[in-house]
Length: 279
Image (cartoon, rainbow, N blue to C red; front, side, top):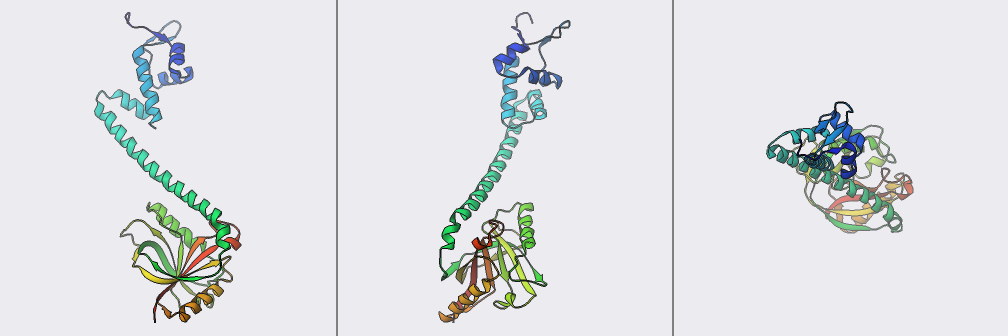
């Protein structure tokens, strides 16, 4: 002890930039106990070696370790414990990075929708033939009673959102409705065989998952609320019949800009997708 240079708690606080209150707390929890304590004055004294320990405590805190975890790391004489701890923390950070990247992309997508909205609404009605690529979908399908075509069953949307969240799937597009009725029947009847789904990036054996093969479709955009969407349907179906095609499957709606994005229904954008084949 006589050969060791000792530093007061005030010295350590100033040299290492750690508050005295924090050093006292580390002493209380046995994380960094002073080398010497004066029995009469209760003054704490530290060594230079303990400065290095304090440096490691601060470093491990910056890595995201809790004080309990740091205590364990400092107590183990072997580096294997430290290595395992660092690998675990690195994996945690990797997962957080992926989660934050997904959140960043979601916010960016929301911003893009808002910024692009004025341009979208300036577009006029048109129909195009598109090749719809193969995708995997998380979906639910059931008959809705007392269905109203101008009302979107948002509760069904959140059912899909929860399936994706709880199973940690990665969404790969927007929410979609598929009407397993005759064309435009959902506008005429109060019973609707309705499928709600969202594409995901994974291929899974999850019970509410299906993979759809690519297909050809006539695609149009509906701008505004849902109460007059039937008019866009009728115009698109007329276009299909007038251009040598026929309907070849249930019609779908993709909600490009919807109530979950904006409040004003005049700014909604819905993509109508009608599977077709040549007559």
